[in-house]
Length: 258
Image (cartoon, rainbow, N blue to C red; front, side, top):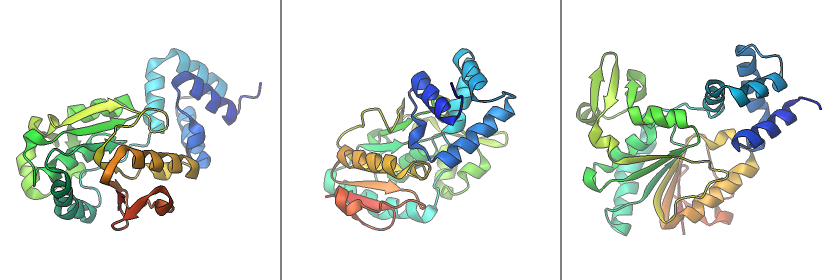
């Protein structure tokens, strides 16, 4: 057998049901080769053998390949549109019991930002965010809710004072915000999607996927949205065939199911 990258992708699929064919190969292969070298393994075969027997290495691998770069209120201008225009529009359409899904939520920055944005218009007692990610390690970090100052730099000052508690050089998100978020493991390429969502947020994640995988995910988001619901994407992402799927575009980052 040739123990090349094709072998590695096949082994990972069998081992943890993550399909590396859905990721841009050049980027992902470079990341994985770097990780293998960092751990001192001589090639894919020996690394796969180690992943099968060492839970710590396996957790590290999953954490490494699921790119986790996140921060609160990332691209603040877009969050202002969400807060000032999209949320009031959704409340007017559907009432205050909105079903909101933060997909590929990473370390929790995004779903907690969603709670704070919604809190401008809705009581915290009525806010419930579904937050999902493929990586159980980042979900655990999200549940802990501890962040460095850089992560929360873009949070509006009044919300920062109200919902963050200084802990040494870091900040902990308040329990009032935590209670509004339900974290779950979820793979966008193989697991069932929530249904009848009013808002779905998935930002700065699909840039790492192939065009074919993006197409599948954007169509699944469409199915998961309620008619009139909105999809909020990242500043580097656009849905080129949004009309064919059935979306209309409010602006570059918000798409509506019609």
